[in-house]
Image 1: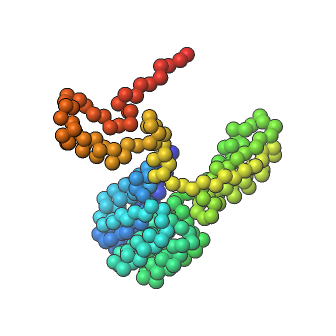
Image 2: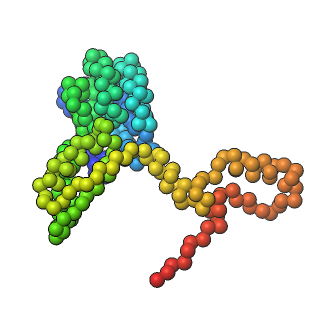
Image 3: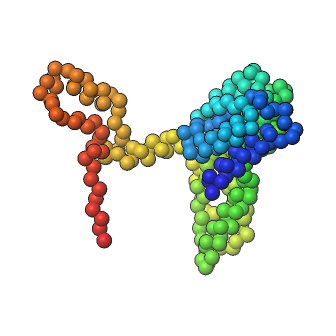
Length: 255
């Protein structure tokens, strides 16, 4: 499902730039203002868009932002200063980027938003992504269907940032749809903050025998020892500085 969504978003965005009204843009420059491509979703979308656009003769420059609105605003100003022919962006903030979007409009540079729209429709040319209201209602219908046979049920929603973005719209649509199913009640909405790099690092640390990754200083200390006179009697030895990974043994299966 995620792969299809990524391909759809990227394909539609590229198709928008390649539509008849933008035919003259072929061979010209497109700035893609993106999130961190190390994230699987962002990386997949970026790769799909770039391949589709370049295959049709567009010159795409990808600029990343670690979910930092201030940095993305600066990147947008740089793109405007370079007089690119179009800007495609995964907007980092629906509020903080409004001044930069206004400057792009004044410079007559078309902007295509991916993943998250903004209420000010006059500030962008097109939006490519899912309907958040539909997504929220669909999730509620699926949950109601899964709870058939239960006289009552209490539901907790774990959402993204509720300050702005797609989460507020999806949660509101979810709650509205749930209200049409007697017996099912939303009792809590827990807000989370989407931080894939930090989450991936925490998961990686949790998989280590020591509960953390080996540091560069620890590896350097081992190298310094082997290179020093103190290692004169150390021979035929493999010194593993791996936090115990090499010696890790899986627990035997139990019935």
